[in-house]
Structures are given as C-alpha cells and as structure tokens.
Image (cartoon, rainbow, N blue to C red; front, side):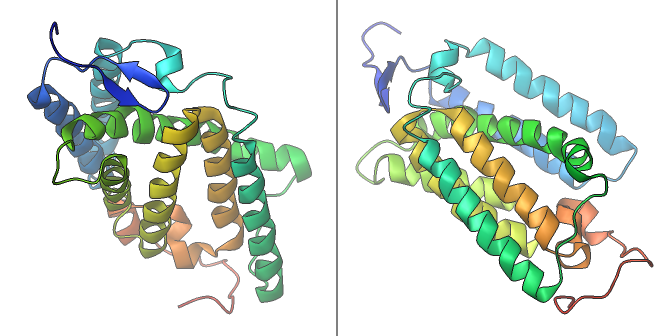
Length: 242
C-alpha cells in the first residue's frame, strides 16, 4: 500500500485495496451470485441465498475500515433528511393518484398490520443501500478512474445500472431502480449517510407495493419470480391491469 495515494470518496480519504483485480472480483462474484439467486427456482434458491449472503459478508468483513466510512453514522443525517421529505411528498402524490384509480391496497389491521407487513422491507432497504453504496459504488469509484470516465458520475451511473439489471425482467422496478440508484449514489457521495437513503428507499418501495396492483408489478418480484407469478383468483380487477 505504501506509495499509493489515497482516493477521495466524498468527505473521506480512503486508502485503496490491494489492486484493481481484487476490486473487480469483489464486484463480479457477489453480483453473479445475486443474479443466480434471482433466477433460480425454489427450494434451491434458498440455499444459494445463504451462499451469496456469506460471500458478501466475507468481502465486507475483509474490507471493513469503519462504520463511519460505510455511511452508518449520524453525521449529515439531519442535513440529508430533505431526501426523506421528498420521498414522502412523492409517496403522498402517488397515494392520491392511486386513490383516484382505486388501486390502493393496504394490509389489514391498521398501523399494527402495516408495521407487521413492512418492517422487514424497511430493514431490507438498509441492506440494499449498503450493497449499492458502500459495496458496489466504492469499488466502481476506484475502477472507473482516468480520463475516459467522468469521475464519480460514471461510477454512480454504473452502480445504478447493475442495480437496475438485477431487477429484470420487472419493467417498472427496472426503470425505478435505475433512476433511484443513480440519484441515491450521488446523494451518498454528497452526504455519506446510509440511514436517510434507507428511509427514502423504504418509503418509495412501500408506496409502490401499496399503490400498484399486484398483477401489474407481480408483487415487486424480479428474476424467475416475476416470470412465474400467477395472479390470485380473488384479486379484484382494477383499471390499471394490463
């Protein structure tokens, strides 16, 4: 590591890992495993999920420097809360539109039912932001250096693109994750705080889940799950059905 200049990632100088080959492998191996999980039928998928999770955990532990570097910190949380506010505004507009189209579908049980259905998704939002920002983006920032690339924007777009591809063949989620992924990467480079992005991610994801009919987005499934989705016979017809 001696003699190599540190790389600036937002407001922190982080020494680079052993080399570009390791960065590339640490992107390719977990990402390929994630795609394999998405496109593998059950029950094999469950075993592959644990293999992918173990691979990501090993890479994360080996490259761990500090929680501050990962963006799991209170610094800049308040200054980045406007992102959460913007997500709430988008969510409110989507709910109003869905009410006009009669496509709102909330879980039964009031607040307790809502929390019971979506607390796991809120945690999953944090995990996705961790993978997106501090796992893939950090390595692509190091790989996409040089005069041929436009600095952090190139890395942010490349990260958003692989994030989007992982949501194929779901057309809605593919487009949404490309747009949100790019914006989230740029916001992370500015504020380096995962918590506000995870909250915004959870709000937007839950909004899609409760305003878009299941037959339209296939209950937000991706990969093989999207293709094998079958509409429940009791699902009420809506004006948004294809």
